[in-house]
Length: 427
Image 1 (cartoon, rainbow, N blue to C red):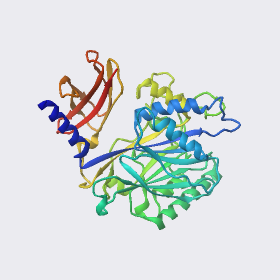
Image 2: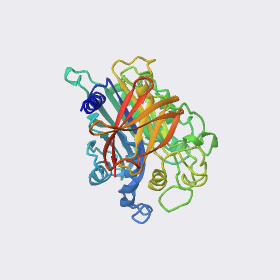
Image 3: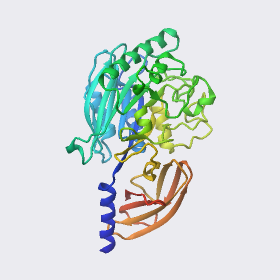
Image 4: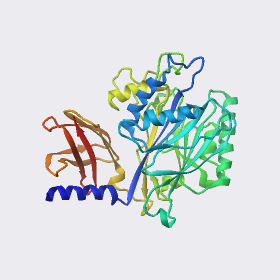
């Protein structure tokens, strides 16, 4: 009983006692999700197939903020993605933004969010030339909301004009300038993410320059991975390309293999520096599934891509011709600009439920050592082992074949005292 009470106490501290929080942010071009055209249709872009792929991707990545391009303009489809993809397999905490439309495009933007951590404050359209650019303002749920102590994050979601050439580049510039001028008159000093499918080919494009060097310094955006240059068909940027996951042509998805960096999440200076209690977690930006080894080939072509589990890889390769881009944010009211914590540096995920083997996916900013303990619900310690992680992504398997079917808690303990708990179902 003593062990049981101690374990429950530990879990309560982990659940309610943290002064910090983290947010996983993902942006994804869904490739005509729920939208039928002459070239993207039920035969080569089936929504049931896409739902299955998306469930696999979401279950692996677990976003707290999930923004999308190229979803149908139909509110029925927006609800369908919420009900058939996000709130499935025991998950019920995702909500979506309201839908606004001005430009009249048949493919639009949408945002979904984890309602256990965030709530929607407001949503408006910043500009409607060619396609709408949406502005979603979220606030973090915490115990100090009743005193007016609110932390906001504002997501600006854009799908800029496609195709190369000066004319299209200038149209992208108009879209961005319109949006930036709206933000300048709305709120120029907050936590901003400017995200989406930008369809740009290098950092010299006028739309990108407008984002980086806007006339108001408070609204100048930063590339978290500091990768400026000519990305198009340039193998030097293979680790950052987001299109195309396909080398062949199925009539819907773009072909040609991984050779363009179209998809971005840019951060404001406030987020880079942690000025308003939210800070970008260094080295957390990633085009999900990109291993840098598939320049001008399909994502799942040889050599074997081991950056994600194979089922996730196949889902990424088949769902869209784009890769989702991901980053993580630290929320901390005590934050100083130089602060770095072990909690922020670690991202741990386990497959659940599991059979005889548990797969632990670790993302760490630095080399780290973890103690892993498996407890039963009565507090009995069934298993313990150590894991030495290198900086970056580590995948570790743990044998649980001797455990009976049931519910367990996996406790991770870092060398600096950080603990996190994950429920495990063995079946």
